[in-house]
Length: 336
Ligand code: ATP
Image 1 (cartoon, helix red, strand yellow):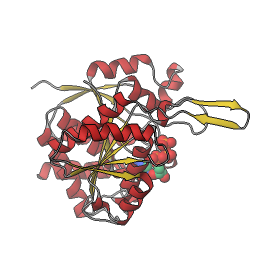
Image 2 (cartoon, helix red, strand yellow):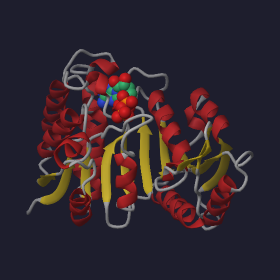
Image 3 (cartoon, rainbow, N blue to C red):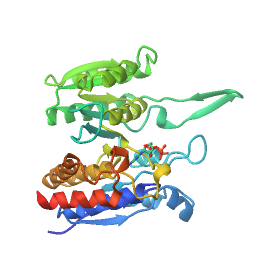
């Protein structure tokens, strides 16, 4: 069988380390993937003077599938977020973040099984800030019916297809009556077409409390952009941390798989980053390519390494390296 083609973006900070691990374990599943490496982020900025060269975007669009390492974004200054520009440039309107407990990982809860679906193209991430007069800064938060309906349709179709029991829309329409009101209204319209999926609404602050007290109160969480970002990090914390949660950014004919975490400059280059999130993103990529069985085998191999508790990285209480963890996953794949 001929190899699948996919783009590989090493990214910044711990990106190259965790991408390297994910690439090795994907190869060990036996699914042949021919990777085309594309530079985005700090390396691209250094070489081409642009953190997101047009040619990189074009390569991803043409190929249709990418596995992406985290890309750093300067805080409070510097170039705009590459992650945001990439999502917008490729029309990756849906951000899908399944958050599941992995037995063996020290965490507050067992049996967490949540899915965060985040609108990926607008909200506060339109990045428009203006200073009408010195000392006053305003940020634009754009919500459109078109994008809200699109993400609601995605969420309900996902819930129905995957046998999920409910979709909870996370909002702040008590304060943001018109913008979050529109988001809610669009979700209600779509929900009406899915009588088999329970429709619920929860104000964002209350939703955070629910999740901390008892994550089983929710199932699929449908969120505008910023709430989705915050809720997914919170949910990652419930299952043991950012090193564990994968994400898919999906658009029409293009899909970019990545980790929820960032470039973690504090541990970059030390070989101790946890590659689990990117390995699980790799499993999602395999399923997307039509290799669901290989994806499941990869998830099972990761679960086995955690269950046995050997070869874990420091963030989850172990003392192994990124490479040792990846080798353990490869060995577990061989045993299944
Ligand atoms: P960025 O600016 O790229 O978002 P950041 O450091 O602000 O980077 P994260 O990269 O998400 O944000 O990291 C937050 C914390 O979680 C850091 O202390 C980091 O060390 C830890 N962390 C994130 N990802 C991992 C990982 N894969 N393995 C171990 N620790 C991680």
